[in-house]
Image (cartoon, rainbow, N blue to C red; front, side):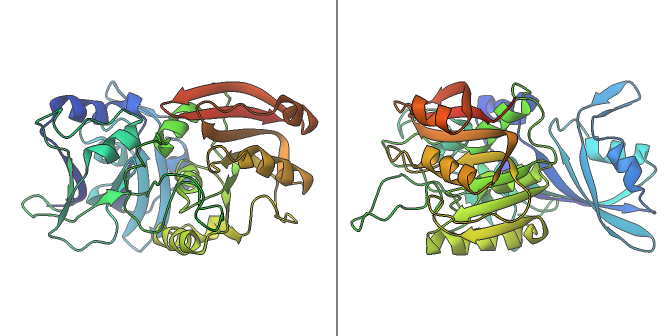
Length: 360
């Protein structure tokens, strides 16, 4: 009875198999209490994976959170989810696991919800997170998965995706809305005319190595940050620091709540500013920049131009600009700002542009 936390339930076998495949790229994150004194050097040694009794375990992100007299708390993230993987790895390092809590599975978070609840995940949200075309209500008789958690034999704790996603556009006063995330910890399906990019989709691409090692130890800018899903995902995958740029007050409140809830205040900052008018930059220049401005506005590239002007971009920084699928980036503006287009990938009605700044 020492395992608890988030569980996803579904009666769709195909969906279940897809979610559990390592190729989906979703990280399974755990809070782990182990016995004994933990050596941080040993944790660093398993980062690229480890072979135990002939079984190969993939990359492991393990961090010592708190060392006590006879035990310690760790945060451990894995991507494969082999049987008893966390326990076997800890035992290999000489530590018995006395408590194991799964706190997230990809974009789905356990959160601070009391035991005894569950939350149905709507098909549109699953489609959004997987980058798939959502089914119509009558196209499948199978039920959407339910997020659930808790100890075996208990009803569990309710959980939901980490991120709210909304349609884009301008309001009656022509103020730019936060680009993708309104306030609140649970997602809402995108507007009918928008197919948005889930953070997992983007980070699966970045983790694939096509653009080199860009996440580990990265200094990140999340422009038009909304509630911060992209920057927070980068931190969870090993980025060193993230700056969130957002001007909408409602989104800022939710962003700060998310940073506090995920205990990321020490390695992030919030800049309450318009990304097109930010006047100065303090701290290290960014090595990874992500912009998700309202479609059709051209503001993503304009924000990069402004960030370059104030010295916020490191040489050879990777830039990711999300636009509508039919939008093209101005070639002259790219050249004038030292940007080279490396690749573009279309997902439904969205297009991701991958660029490099300065020398490659």
